[in-house]
Amino acid sequence: MGLFYAINNVSSLTGGIISIFVIDKYGFAIYFTVCSLLEVVAILMISLAPEFPKYREEENETVQETCMKILRLTTSTRMSKFLPYMMFAGLVTAKFGGFQYKIFENTIPSDTNQEKASIVALVLMIQGITTIFLSYTSGKLAEIFKLKHVLLFFLSCFFLAIGMSFLTFEKDNLHLAYVMAVVWGVSFSGANTLTGVAMMKDFDGFVEAYAVQQSISNTGTIIGNILII
Image (tube, rainbow, N blue to C red; front, top):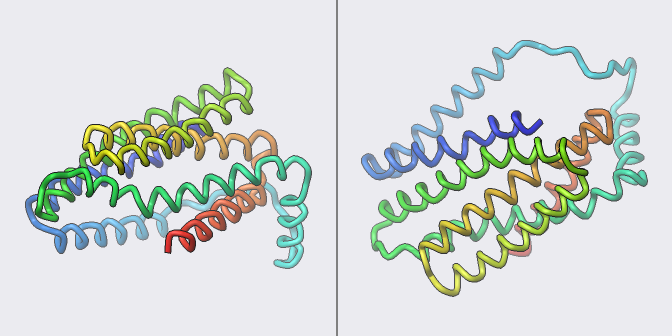
């Protein structure tokens, strides 16, 4: 699971590299064109992906039955222990997406938008490297230590990242912004990987468990975005 999220988070690194070179040399219009082309390539790759057999084969299961199964799982004793964590991760994701760029922008002395975008891309690239490494490492930590203890560690990193964000915003210091980006990378890589590990181990990899995870996390993100507005 850690290796999966590490590979998945390579996009954070490649996105930063593309941003640095394309925005600095060719501007935003070419950058968004390149991003659009990459998205088309991704869609084509998905359409050509082979079909895999379902983990469990449920015959004649209606949409209503599936929804009721997800609802029962959501309210179950085991899943209810993870719900606050999933909601919190979603809320913080909204803050992360809504304010991180603005914090970076305030710490950069340059006056031109392109130079600011290049520096932000460099910071995000460093964050991407951290995310890739910690995604793999957190998966290994979950195999060595109790999952609860590892989750608590990365939850503590969330609070440290929030504190670093406030400090960076107050001080307008670019060096603090680099540290903040690394701490956020640690927090998100651990949270995403370990939530996936929990769904796989505690719920036997059932699709419904991942559906609950995405639903609660995205609900937290929506609420967080509403609060930002």
